Length: 117
Image 1 (cartoon, helix red, strand yellow):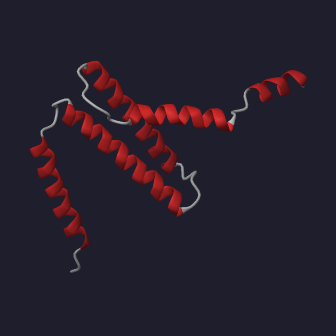
Image 2 (cartoon, one colour):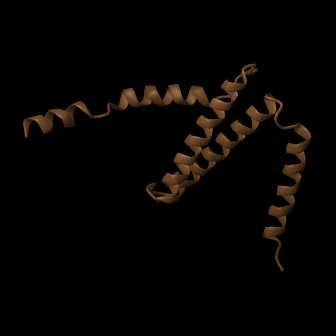
Image 3 (cartoon, one colour):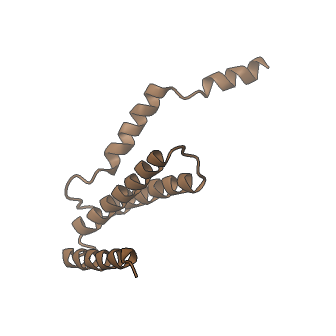
């Protein structure tokens, strides 16, 4: 029993350390300049995809309590996806005109979804 208790105590996650790690992760998600190296862009996009997928799985499991928490998480996923789009744009994978036309199409679709018949 003492060994189990020792392992349990040593595996406890300290809140301050977790916040420090989250700060490191947050800083890694920010698109902050030109990325000359293609592999850096791809790795950053993978990280954004993975974290976004993690949050979506969390939401699917319905682990978060309130509607406000779920909404905050969904907004975070949208922002992570926007960061990924910015990386693609900065890397020349996507043209600004393509993003603008896609935005117009989505705007029209959302308006038609809310029209009353």
